[in-house]
Length: 186
Picture 1 (tube, rainbow, N blue to C red):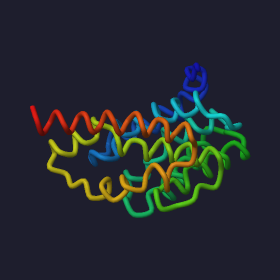
Picture 2 (picture 1 turned 45 degrees about the vertical axis):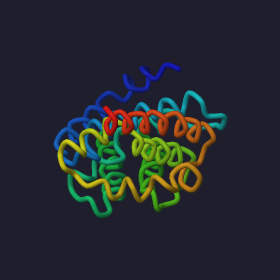
Picture 3 (picture 1 turned 135 degrees about the horizontal axis):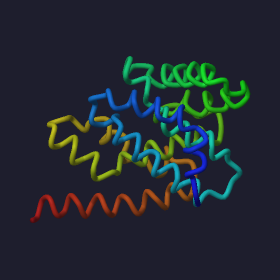
Picture 4 (picture 1 turned 180 degrees about the vertical axis):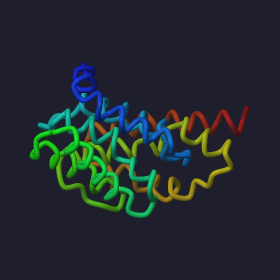
């Protein structure tokens, strides 16, 4: 599935998100994490069997953690508001702004998303808990993995919404276990 047209259409909005994400030093939630969530979002959108607004989902992937440039606690609300403000400044239609806002506002693992696009974002975001690159960067930076370790046991069966997300989980967990095996035994 081709998503380039979405990124071209919303180029100014997405570049703004990338610029903000470049300023975040948290190895778990920086621009690399944003890119991983974007890849996961595209994977889910390519496999999903329900109707979903792909434009909203892609924009949400870019903007979901920009609020971390301001605060970690309540970052999802700040991210959603920053997105709303930027979309208003760029003269987007109010209904589309609201759809994007709703996709971002409740993406934390202990929250219930308001829309199908919010569920896509939450699944894509949480699948990055299985990203090898994330573990490498955290371990190399002596960063604690407490939050990741808290979510892993419940991620597949209690957090993820879509069967395609669970299939991606199954693939990624094998890759992650193989990575740890090689780290320990080689």
